[in-house]
Image 1 (cartoon, helix red, strand yellow):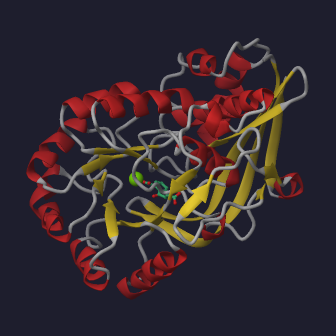
Image 2 (spheres, rainbow, N blue to C red):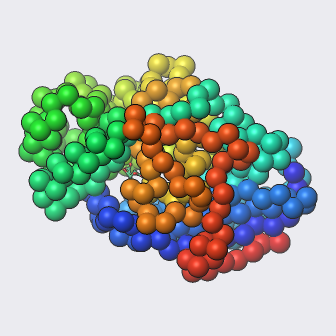
Amino acid sequence: MKITRITLREIHMPLVHFFETSFGRTTQRRIVLVEVEEAGGAAGWGEVTAGENPFYNEEWTESAWLILRDYAGPQVLGRNLRSACEVSALTARIRGHQMARGGLEAAVWDLEARLAGLPLWRHIGGVRSEIACGVSIGIQDSVEQLLQKIQCELEAGYQRIKIKIKPGWDVDVVRAVRGRFPDIQLMADANSAYRLNDAPHLKQLDAFGLMMIEQPLAHDDIIDHAKLQARLDTPICLDECIRSAHTAGQAIEMRACGIINIKLGRVGGFAEARRVHDVCRERGIPVWCGGMLESGVGRAHNIALSTLENFVLPGDVSASRRYWQRDIIAPPVEVTPQGTIQASDRPGFGYELDLDYIRSITAREETLR
Ligand code: OSB
Ligand code: MG
């Protein structure tokens, strides 16, 4: 597999509804897509999951573009790869920037699956053709609006509800949701909005039977999460803190969490995501697949990842229509009335690219040869 061309595209896609977390509100995505081509003319596609601003982690659209163009791309271009497994090592000299590196890596996995004539999910070692889906619901303008949204998503079939919390939108909101929906699988994601001092406040959440509380403390602080977990009955799920199989192993050893959210981009691609998955499986830690408001390309990759054995909890992988009026893949990702997504049996990530639409929303494009 000789990589002869890498094309970067930045596309702009307005969200159907704004998405608000403790670190801010997003209304329009600026997404970097990576297309890799090999000598025989076959192509693979990946998506960089970085946000528009360096607020979730240190990466953003602009940093990803430069890392891909000036560092990660040149390391892979012209190489004769024996396997997609090599990509991560080729760019390992770059400190951090896993999302940029991961977008390129995922594109090569897609390409390799296509060349092998296999669906990506089988190519990475997936064990199920149907995945369980939950939704992540952002901070709303009112509690009533949030309750209405939850009602809608439950009617659509989604198996679990995640709500975003932050100081001032937490205990009372969770109480209201539990009051209205006593039996649903419910969890809360704080995106690092609290400090260890807030432990007594967060302890109140133990009363509501949450499946987990996701990343309550700082994005890079495993030790304080361990201290907090010792004081909470509710399992902590780490998101931002888990950047590699190594950090996952450390978090588990420190008892900083009972559950781990694996995001393909955050850990730098499929090879590392599988290693995180394996570490968690060996230590009895269940995992699920997180989302970053992906377009169809990243969404399709998340579906593939979710078919690995230890993805035993519903993930934040949901239908295209929750995000986009029109997705860049055809058909769009749809969810069954049972709240599942069927993995495609077509080669590669399993969907057609809507190239005309992609062209029409491309803000910049650059090809490395
Ligand atoms: O913490 O999981 C998160 C979106 C952007 C940044 C961080 C997160 C999220 C989500 C959205 O929760 C998940 C999705 O629906 O894609
Ligand atoms: Mg999260």
